[in-house]
Image 1 (spheres, helix red, strand yellow):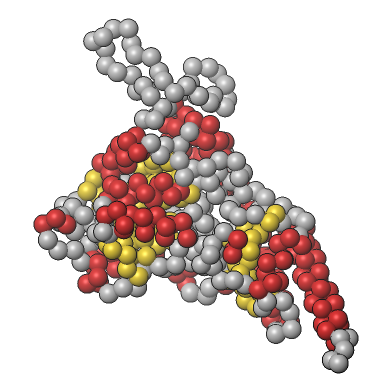
Image 2: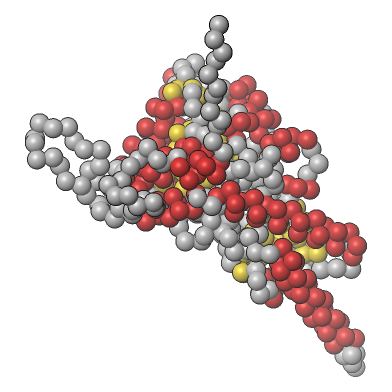
Length: 414
């Protein structure tokens, strides 16, 4: 037999992010595709001709189509873009209509969307580690309504990882759909589909956007078939089409400008994500060493990040690194509140995943957060600059503490 022809190597993430939209030509020779701002597109003059692909931007437009082609390629699933990460989650709930959602620690906005949906539909919310019988649905009205196991990993705000293969096994036992929020671990950090996820969503505002200038979300559906509690197998492509219908009807689509910015951001995704993750790992190691050396004398009490987890599954699940988000608990709440304002390079702000490093006393935006917790999102600045800025802030806290103690010692007790 003649030898088989050589197969072309599979393109890498960076190549896909730059060229996955090549099948969507535009009418000029511009290297960068144009931004389409039009909300409407004209019908053909021939009334018997089929309608064109683009009619009204609430349905879709050329920029969104191009963006979704890139997302589908780099996320390894059928991708639908939305106006925000929470809009993406809302669409998942509207399409799947779960009678039960099992969820653990998660972003407070996710919890708010789940509670809103529960109030509207009667959907139950149960713990992530609930018993299997709490996920079972009975009665004819439940046919086609699969329970959802929703896992956010890494977890916001601590950056710690959750074992996806563990919950994949549980989902199979319960005939549930495994939905993963992978916002804090954009490609190439992890691929939840490789660990058995059925549906993956991201807040594209974070790492997929990466420049703190766009609001967006994306849902990716695993290619193939999804398990159904009614013993029916759902075509992933059909689910993707339903998501687009929901987007059109509800109107939570992404704007043309945001889609264009998303295409721009994809071009540097791997460079940005790997640099942020690398910076975080180095800083986490140094901060942990500082905590160990100072013991109970320093301002810092505890640090959490996926890189500090020793389980083997963490490295298997996150082959591209451990992500750029970590959390530090301070010993005194007032110190946690003041620390972000003492820094120069780190921006005191909410959100995460941008090229600039940010830190936030989490109580500013999440009333349920630990009161002594500061969340850090490392950017792409020089590592020694970031470390020096953190050290400066800690030194100022220590000076302030000494001033307070000396002042109290000098007070008269008369």
